Image (cartoon, rainbow, N blue to C red; front, side, top):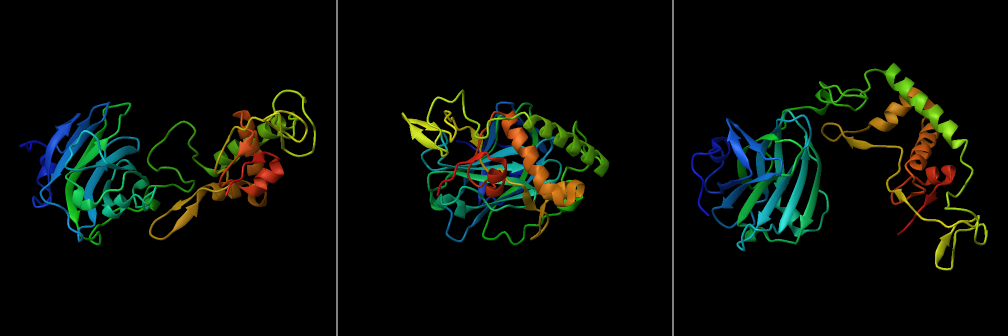
Length: 326
């Protein structure tokens, strides 16, 4: 594999040549300081000049997502066996519009975690692959996943570092998010612009939910008519799960049905915008009305079960079956 000369200078010239060098571009082209990826996705492939030592702990690069949507970036790690298939992959969802330092600890390669540490500008980090020693890394790929458009990205200053102490985050989440937890500086259908709009929307949804739920007669949300024993308990009969009132029960639902969405807001700060928005409108009725809305939506979507990490009180009050496991 030969090093490609004269392309993507913003990537090639910014790292230490003792660490990594760009050797191939797949499914992408240079546009001034940015890189245009194909709809089918693409990859920048880097070769390590030498084996990593135990003192090298981080892959770091600076990234700008020049699109109106979050970028799904994949970091592929390849051994000397070649670059046909990566042995380890780390997937990042990165916000648009501002420069984001991407910090990838090599400790992730031990395969003991499914999710990475949250960092500013990165919505989530997913970890997948077969455990890999960092000394076995020969190539590193920075790839853009398939997309509905040809995304424009900026990837620069790719480097291997012993520490991430020098990484600087030059933005504040308070500057990006409005009082309702939405992105500032952009508009879209359904965006909430003020408290009156939020109140009108939630109260209209609540009235719709109450009307719909008043028509629901089946307490256990079973299937069909009563054909089995009504024991007052969920039970098995002829190999089928039966509701307490004697109907067949086919479980269909979702997990993490909870009245909160907590996320980071700046350094060592968290905020629950869902709870805060509900309380702005309904005050001490926030939980009760959330439960009514949520039950209506679940039934509207054809669901009759809530599962792992769901709110127990919601399951009790709504009489929607909670699937519990330990």
